[in-house]
Amino acid sequence: MIRPHRTHALWYAFILHRISGVGLALFLPVHFYTLSLALTAPGRLDEFFRWTDTAAVKFAEFGLVFLLALHMFGGLRLMALEWLPWSDRQKTLAAGAAAISFLISGLFLLRAI
Amino acid sequence: MLSDSADMEVSVWRGAGVAGQFENFKVPAQENQTILDVVAWIQQNCDPTLSYRYACRVGMCGSCAMMVNGVPRWTCRTHVKVALQGNRISIGPLRNLPVIKDLATDMDPFFDKWISAEGVHHPTRSRDDAIEQIDPEDHARRQANEGIECINCSVCYAACDTVAGSADYLGPAALQRAWTLFNDARDAGRVSILEAVSGKGGCHNCHSQGSCSQYCPNDLNPMAAIAGLKRETALSFFKRRT
Amino acid sequence: MLTVRLYMLQRITALLMAPLVLGHLAVMIYAIQSGISAAEILGRTQGSIAWFLFYGGFVVAVSVHAAIGLRVVVHETFGLRNTLLDLFTWAVAAGLFLLGGRAVMAVTLS
Image (cartoon, rainbow over all chains, first blue to last red; front, side, top):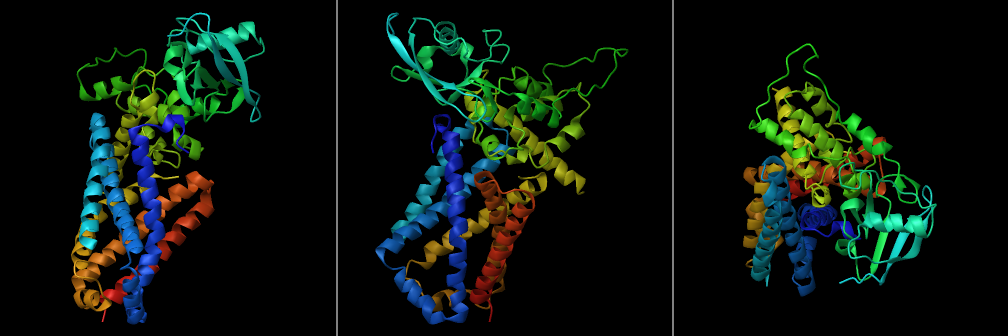
């Protein structure tokens, strides 16, 4: 998968953006479905929230928030390097994007537990 | 350090079209030796039927690029010491292009895309007009200068995963050429260039993976050139609507 | 398989969503502090035009953005092209819009 020509910072930034994007797209239908339970079956929504209180699910939630933050900052990085002519700072931006993602999702995890 | 007596394990891709496999050779290590020297040694001493392509041997003609240990390189200017992993080297034909035989690829798709990207000169004047004065400090001129050292070696094209996944994608070299001409005051094709790079295989497919800029043997930055095209097409996208 | 039009749609929806995502992250961090329940969420969101616009806009933008993003992935990974690729893109956009729209209705209306 990570073939020799791919071992550099910008390619890693790309693959993180792609994986987080696909992950979010797969998660969205489930997210929408559970929220619409509020309309059709409020009791089942609360049941669902109780299920989310378990540690394993908490960790999965951390993953989702992490994906969201990663994808957003990765996307902002991409638009910055496409539209702002800062050619040589791209790698710094890529690293910064990942760092901020960790910060935000870390904050979420601390608050959640 | 390599001593002159040791042998290197070199595996070379052999085959025509899609079929083929790596064949192993033992090649004596020299103190000073390029990958192209290794390929030439095998052809001269082991198997005269080995096919490969080269011309100038000094990094100007762009004809000798190959995959060396999985990475595209100009083989005439790549020292064996740079590429050697342990005592092994694998040498294959350039990625993303059809193989004719062994290490020689069919470069037609690569050059056809230069034409498709309008990477051709669109003259502003005829031979009867005076030569246009170019200010070397002009911003657009400096942008154009960034890309003019391209030797069409196809290393960037072989490094690009977007080319691998999307057969119509014009690729880094053709798009960089389009960007260079777009910025050249002596080229009249600005509108047709932007149109040519806005279609299904155009610059907008680029994911800024940066492998083109990472491996360009002349240290050019095709990814930045493609970003330039994205900016200009985005601007003209809004202009056309107002 | 992106033309300049799809590229611009992708980038414009991304720019729209950047502040929405930050808002959404902030709401989530706030909402889960003292546990989470259907009643608590609905108490905040139901009957609120502001939340309807916030999440309604989010759903529209994400439907377009995700459809174009998945279009690229499916083309590059599975080689889907032309009409089939267009159908796939529209199906993803419509599916997310319907599901998302229903969810927004559920938590903001009545």
